[in-house]
Length: 165
Length: 165
DNA sequence: GCCTTGACTGTTATGATATAACGTTAGATA
DNA sequence: TATCTAACGTTATATCATAACAGTCAAGGC
Ligand SMILES: [Zn+2]
Ligand SMILES: [Zn+2]
Ligand SMILES: [Zn+2]
Ligand SMILES: [Zn+2]
Image 1 (tube, chains in turn brown, blue, red, yellow):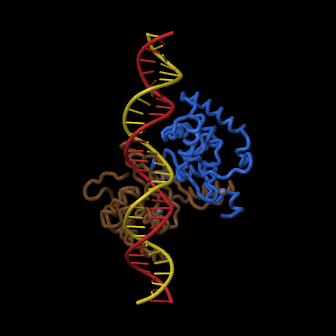
Image 2: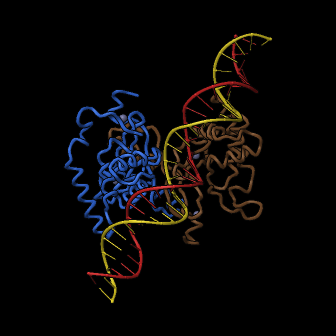
Image 3: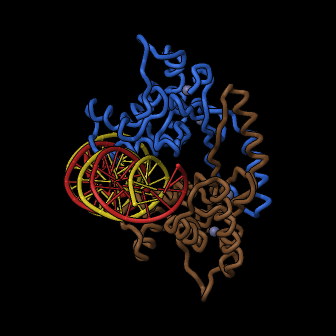
């Protein structure tokens, strides 16, 4: 699901180097230590899979890859690893796509918004400070104690606007 | 799914009168005429079911009620009616709950945000003008052509804050 | 009026997403 | 090493959603 064609060795800039991936994996290790949770092999590998993915991946996509590498073959294997990553701020769940994506800025305590392209299914993580502030205000006005929020925008990414849809 | 207990004849103020329900049904009729679409019996009844519901209803909940009243018994019956209502601004889909809810302000061209209570599963439709403005700005900054958005907040409603969670 | 046409309904069948429950394994702790 | 718990992998099942097709109905052209 939601995987776009690659062109040559790498599909795009954000996947053309391992430097960034490595940095995030290092950060994940550090955070796990910090929080006294374990970044086990399945969990780590799941994060790598998300980081290397083009766009968000469904749980069953992740599972397929894990199974091919000798990890478990059944859905809970993928769901557990993905939920771990989400709980620890290393991945996000994109509800509109029934999919997951690695967090692009795991070092920040950000509440992200996602920009989902209807044409190519790409998912971009946007800065959502202002959006969350506005949402907090709206929640306050309603007497609602806001914990967290899902903010997902649908439209056309820059690339697909040129090619239109 | 997501149905809370009722207490006596009616569960709460928003369901204690038919006046508002009737007004919305009338508005739905008018809008259908306007748009040259048909508010058929299943569709109308589906809207009524949502309006009378306590919180959001899953498609299969709606289906169960429809089937009991002599409409079709299979999932597409419910999904089609629900999709019609959503497309015509008479209902909203709550992705976090895999559920649907009648629009509380169908007369406005609003882009709604939803406040979902973790404790009682109630869903409140909040004014989201400012939130959408902020989201538009974030999308612009990313070169993203925003079409529409899903904004769902999770937390505690006013009533459940008192009773804590 | 009556026929054409497209929208609507209902069905069967299947696909896609997600979790419950349980026995086993492996890390941490003492 | 003994013990305890988190994590893993499995089976089984629950839940959500759509594809495809046949019969029905209502609006618009003649
Ligand atoms: Zn993130
Ligand atoms: Zn695109
Ligand atoms: Zn609404
Ligand atoms: Zn509540």
